[in-house]
Image (cartoon, rainbow, N blue to C red):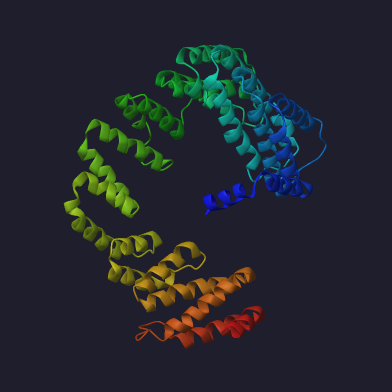
Amino acid sequence: MTDSRKQKLIDLGPHALADALLNLAVHSDEADDLIEQLIATPKENVQRFKKKLSGLKHSNRFIDWQGASGFARELEMLLQDLKSGVDDPLTGIELVAAFYEADNTIFEMCDDSSGNIGDIFRYNAKELFVDYASRCKDKERIAEIVLKVNQKDSYGIRDTLIDCAGVCLPEDIIRTMITTLQKWADKEKDEYGKRHHLMLIESLARQIKDAKLFEKTRIASWGKLSTAALIDIARVYLESTDVETAHSWLKKIPEGETFQAYERDKLLEEIYHKQGDSEKLTKLLYQKYRSHHSTDTLQALLDVIGHDKRDDTINDEVEQILKTDRLRESDAKFLIAVGKIDDAEEYLLGRADQLDGNYYGSLLSLAEAMESENRHLVTSLIYRSLLVSILERGYTKAYPHGIRYLKKLDKLAASVANWKQFNHHEAFKEKIIQAHGRKRSFWSKYEVKK
């Protein structure tokens, strides 16, 4: 479709397209700016970039969060002017650096609750910088510019240029940058400022895979190491192919610690793989599988113990799931995913009193899955919980969903032959009418739509 439309536009010819663009520019500042960019010479586009950036610094306007996406497009066009106007890598680097140094002005003049403006720095500006830096032969000058920009970083955005140093700078230049940053840190009296320089060293150390330097810097920065720090150090050692040292750092984490357990176990899994320790790997994967039943944790386990053990592995765990009293939607989803529909139905019916309609995201998918298997009783109970949640909260914006659920219940009722210990549909309906009959905005729409 896209290629077809493009060809049709080409067939219109340049005059028709030029007229269309000019007509559009009358009503759209963005279109007008695009036209100016297209017809400008490279030198003119550089001047446009400098003029716009200067204009931002002298602007008194404030952009609220609703206008942030439009402002982000404006900044994107500003960088596009630079890309269209500058081919010399070093000049491009200097001008992108000037954009980063305008961060104070840019963030002060807008509400970036959405993160749209920050993303322009993290992605668009960074990609342009890397493009220029990769083509620039004066690597020492690039390092000087990056360090100059990062002497201060009030908005935590300038370190984006530090984080991509490894892509465009050789290791010897990066080590010189580290030496400079260390000198700055040693002279810094302010604790926050010192830690800022040390964090930049950490980033560079990780990029050149100098795990010992990363470890030394993290200790100098924080002193007593938290669980998160231990995991970070272990990760860098693992990235540096020092598997044993990585493992030794993870062993420092206190027994029973649950903070960042997922990250720790992910590293351990990789370490056991590299060590060829199938016994510990199997034990870890069993733990992950049992703590969170999913097709992913099952697959990871079977990849190690053998797929011929699939049925036994599933059946053993199904037995354990059915013994538990507490409802976990993830367990119900797992039973459905591995084809244990009868067990999933038994599991949900036995814990129907725990169905909480506030968790509509997970429950709705369960209802749809059970309905597709013609398990109409349990499907009805799930839809009941979703409906009751909406009515109890009096959440009028969700009433259209509630009406849809009630109509679904009306239809399902005809297919339920045995309600077991649960209220028949009419009894349930009477009960919610008694409790929520005064919610006329709901019932009037239900009656009309019925």
